[in-house]
Amino acid sequence: MRLHTMKSRFRLILWASLLLVAAGWLLAASGDEDRKQALLLTVSDAIGPATGDYIIRGIERAGRDEAELVVLKLDTPGGLDSSMRDIVKAMLASDVPVVTYVHPAGGRAASAGTYMLYGSHVAAMTPSTNIGSATPVQMGGGFPGLDDGDSRPSRGDDQNGRDAENDAEKDESAEDANADDDAAAEAPDAEENRDEARRGETAMERKVLEDAVSYIRGLAERFGRNADWAEEAVREGSNIGAREALEINAIEFVADNLEDLLEQLDGHSVRMAWGDKVLDTVNIEVIRVDPDWRTNLLAVITSPNIAYILMLIGIYGIIFELSNPGAIYPGVIGAISLVLAFYALQVMPVNYAGLALILLGLIFMVAEAFLPSFGILGIGGMISFITGSIILWDDPELNISLPLVFGTALVVGVFSIWVLGRLIRLRKVKPTIGRDEMIGMIGEAREDFERSGRVYVHSELWTAETTEPVEEGQKVRVVGLKGLRLRVEPVSEDADAVATRS
Image (cartoon, rainbow, N blue to C red; front, top):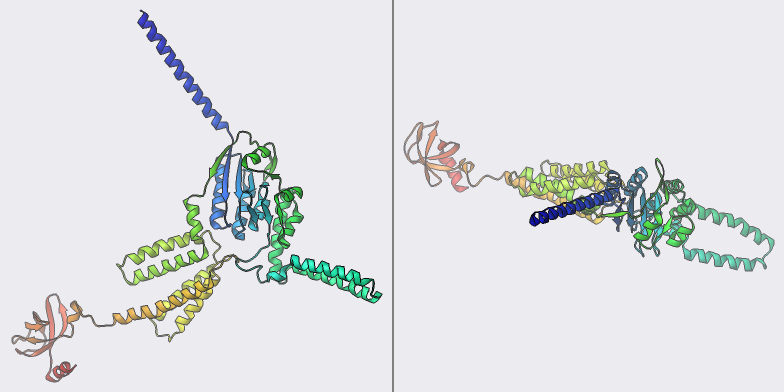
């Protein structure tokens, strides 16, 4: 009886323990479901197609997961205008607030990074970081068509100008009224020249500059930030640090780290496309989203030079495989390279006229090996190839190394004209082995026959057919081969003598 009671108590305790564990698990699960999430994206390199793809997919994922916000930890020297605009479009259209946080200390959000900071719902910086230098420039070359030294006065020029003004003020007391009038007349001209330098000198420069100014002012006005300084960052390339940016209302927060930023964000109201939203960041779960294999692959193949080389390898691999069926390796390598090149081209601003010129140039150079054009097709192909390579990208900041373009054009031209030409000439050489080798060989009849008999050709005894009578020991020439039977014709003594001499 006592043993039965102890068993009952043990079962009761076991069931109670299981119920407590189940209840705790359910409570934990419900707590996890209710807990807010923040997706953390990290960019510490130049802005390009791979970076744009990574950020845009992160924002889309935050929308699907109904996250509270997206934090973009940014440290960039700038990048492509087209990629930057795609990122800003995704930010503005996002249903989830995007917080751009310039971090770590010593980092920056220069050039394209400044536009991204202004295009996010919340702008924040770490102490000892800076933003600015948002003047549009070409990769490796200053403002499009404008020498950097002429684009705006340097600090040294400004200092020299102030020294000159001070000297002029000292001399004014000794000069007459006419000199004063001349100096006053020259001052507006100097100011007008400085304004002209700020606006750019050519029509294209003014168009690019004014477009960038209008774009960043629109972003600043949308989120109530300092539009005047944003314009100065574009026109003059100005830079400011975190504290100054907070003081002039270029950003909303200065935070030492991510935890500090999330604490400050709690209760902050942000302007979304559908209205205002108050952020709730208390006990928020931060989910770090690192670049995946796709982003890493894009980062490599979206380099203009790499994509260009992959495209050429793919094209010539396919050409070589088609001209030599069964080689396998050129076809496999070419197909893989071509697919990777097309994958890169789909996310890059490709000028299809440039791509068409490259293909046309390759066709012309290959055709030079087949057609007697006396070099016209080859030269025209090289010109088309080089021109297409230079204008291949629509974005002015994307360019291919000119030594690579000219070197590749030279190699491709030599390969197409000389190597393929040699292959064509080799095809015209008479075969030295196989069935075709037998045609034209001289043999000797081993018996008299009018229709069919035996002949000795190529150190072998063959059955042969003829349309003319043949005598034993007479020379015969092979004119055809059908199965294992030769078709021959008698050779006259004169022809035999000529064949012997040759």
